[in-house]
Length: 376
View 1 (cartoon, helix red, strand yellow):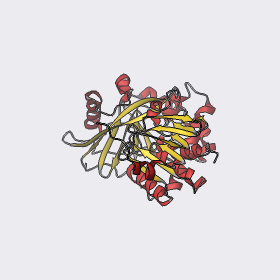
View 2 (spheres, helix red, strand yellow):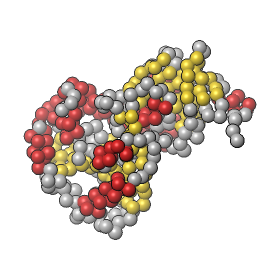
View 3 (spheres, one colour):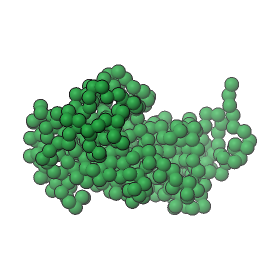
View 4 (cartoon, helix red, strand yellow):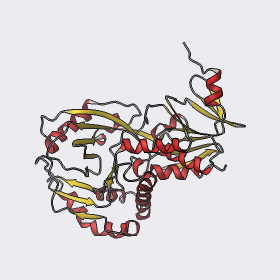
């Protein structure tokens, strides 16, 4: 049996929308905030199919990072120095803007540093990275205005079990509370009279002569402007976009004694990552070990990745008796390179997608850039 909108629903909710933002994550909420500030009298509405945010904004690990040394060295193999520095600058500036926009206390920002770890059998990678550390610090200085990377003299102990022997810290990275960040954004939107509809899954959009026709699945309505901020899912609405999904799986343990109070840790070019959170261990990654399966926009957990996460957890971080209390997945939006897509695909339809796994760093800045596309 079909369910259609009532007359009252059309009249009270769907009629008279000046700006419709599809996607209630970091980018969508930031775009909505800046669009409303740009045109205070406009009716700005954010729609989100999930109770919170379906993609990654409330499912990420809360790493406020902009680049580990091995990641940047790997990027320099396929990109020019200028292109890599452009990415780093955008991330660094975006993190600063996020903290300024939402407030460090409100998002529980921790200036804990970001540690890249090396196992005993990573000698070649370690030697190559240390050899080029002065070069990385020199080229990043114009962006960060300080020495970014330092070799750690001691690796933080995790229940006395961690077996990594060497590490390099990015002293300018940190961590946030992802849930508090999302709630703070939501509070800001409400305070500035931006409307937020949950459980609304837009099926298609089509520009017509006097607006954009929105197919809600159980009815149609017309709006003036549409901003697509659904990242990995954007091709469902704008098929021409070059963006592909990638799933990341995450686990969180029960409380564990003897772990650091804070910090963020990367291993294997950032494909494996973990941090302490409220006395627990959050651990995610390993999608590079099963790329074909994890190249999906379907949420879910797989035995392959879950077994890898558990093996890493119990070998390196926690006693084997430690229960795992939370498991989830999030969907990233990737492309052939690490650039984002911020553009107008037509006079009334605009997109801000393909965060490349760096949504925390660049999402709020992308939302601000996106808002400039509307000539109101």
